[in-house]
Image (cartoon, rainbow, N blue to C red):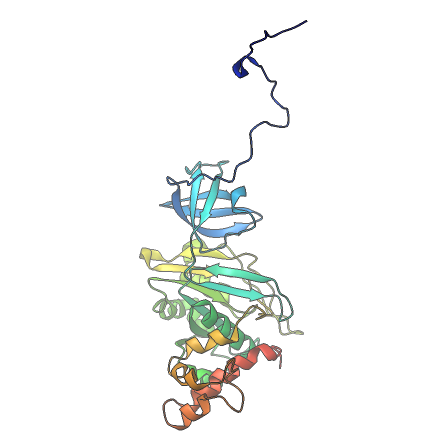
Length: 336
C-alpha cells in the first residue's frame, strides 16, 4: 500500500530513531566559559578532590580531555554539581597551563615520566642525618629535577641529635641552597615546624624524601589540624623506612600562608626525562660562560668554555664542580 503521494516532501518522511544513536559526531567542543576555577588537592583512583572557592568537591576528568591527566597542584576548570555535597560529582573540563612541573621516572631506563606535582614554587628535600643515613645521590637527583622543573630547592635536614650536619652542608654549600636543620626533640616541641614555616609562607611547597626521614612527621607538625597519616619506622636490617604516605596531598597552611604538598616516600628518583642542557639555567653565574662552548657541549668535556670562564675569575670553581656533579647524576646510580 502506498503511504506517500507523488509529490512528497522531505519533511513528510518519518524516520525511526536508531537505537545506537543518531546524533552525528562533531569536533566542536563546548567552551565552558562559565566553568568554575579550582585547584586539585589529591587524586585517588580516577577521582580528584578539588578546592573551589572555600569548599572541596569531588570530580572526575571529562572525556574530552583524552589522556591528559590532572595532578595535585593543577589549576582546573570545573562544571556540573559544585555544591560539594555527599554523592555529588563534578567534571574537570580544562587543565590550565602549568607554571612549574616536578617530574620523575621509575628509573633511568624508564621512558614514562610521572608528574608528581604541578605549579609548586619550591621543593623541600627532606633527609635524615642518621637513621637512615643520608643519600647524597638521591638529593642530587631531586635537585636536578627541581632545577629542570622550575622549582626552588630547600634542604631540610632532620635528626641532628643523632649526627651533625657539617659534612652534608659542606657538600651543598656551594650551591647556595637555603636549608633548615632540625632534631627529633624540636619536631615534638614544634620548634622545627616554626623554623621551616619561615621558608613556606606564601608559597606552594612540595615535600619529597625517602621513607623514614621524618617527612610526614614534619608535615603533620606544620598542619596539625589535618593529621591524616601515621608515621612509620626504619627497618633495623635494611635501613629503609616503611611507606606511610600513599598519595600526594595538598594541605593549606593556616592564615592563608601557603600550601604544603606531602608526597609518597621515594626509594628512587629516575631522571630519564631530564634534558641536561636545561640544568645550566640554575647557575646564572655560569650560564654566560657557555656562549663560547662548542655546539651540543655537555659542559663536562675538554673544549668546554666554562673552564676558561672560571679561570678568568668570573665564577667560583666550586660552582662549576657542583654543576658538573649534578650533570653527572644521571650517569650514576643512587647508591654509588
